[in-house]
Image (cartoon, helix red, strand yellow):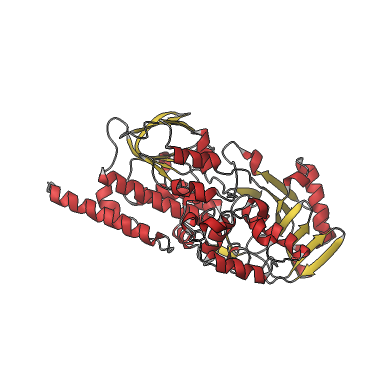
Length: 495
């Protein structure tokens, strides 16, 4: 018979786990991935009880929630469930099946330098990567004009302005922009205010407007300068690593599409994953056991990881009400950048034969940016695009006609003969996809920053928006998943 552990030995294990959790949290911002194997032994005994109370419930089966679940599983915790409102996993990451084994990414799709958390996850899940195609010339359309430029893997933004932004970003910590020594000065300004002070030529300013729409989902006038600088800080304080293609955050794609990371994690969970299970209310979050009111009945858990967008929390009823600071953050969080992404499919990437890279930008037109989204070996040709919803017909057939004519101007008459078209408006997709990116306005972090991460009772906040670096990106989602799993494990041990 195994020897019964003494209270001293249990206390030692508890201290070891807490020390481990603290050390891992400390290095998380450096992009280091520390496995949870060393925590497996003390956690393995947590299997729930005869009353059906879970150790952990996770709300949301996006990349953050699934990462947290995978970490709990790897740590030996078996008493948890993941609750997803949609009938699929992935959240804002989604693949569209083009047939014959090919896909096109509908949501988030790229990773780049410094995004080590999601890169490590891909290696662990045996998902390969390949570079975004950019070799050749980019086409810029304006009015009736057409211009071919070799931008060498960039978007052609002014390097002088980019260098200024890079230098300023050193003053704004990515994980805590509200703690900047210049917060009073920088959080009053929109990025548009700052750009207006930089003596930028009108023709170059339109390029910056397009760049902000692509990266932030809004015009510069609606984006906090402080928040944008925190994004650049995530990219090693190098604007070009944030807003380019070569060696940047748009530089690398996943073989099989980004959603494959989520589907592979979900496969490991078995019946611990519940789809079509929206959480309508959370009660007794300030007690020892939290009750979740879902479309599939009541679920009780000692800890709850809330891995959904902050604004989506407004659709959940909290009893008792959340502390005013957290509630105010959720009410004020912007959710107006849903984005619309299209895919035009051709028999082959014919533009490459002409020395073009398939990238097109249109000044003051319905097309923001189109790019070559063909599979690794170019077996078929795919042009993906972000479009201006207000300038493109909502009817997909009419939208396809408009875009094929634009692509014909850019790439040649072969573009008039697509074999398939896909159009995904995230604003209409489902009630759970409020926005693709968070366009943080001026003044937001000064007022609400301190309420972003602190737990409320037994509620642990997760999701890419809570990440210390690369917030808003897939890498930030993975980091937040790791962090929330550690918080839950350490909290359970303390209890």
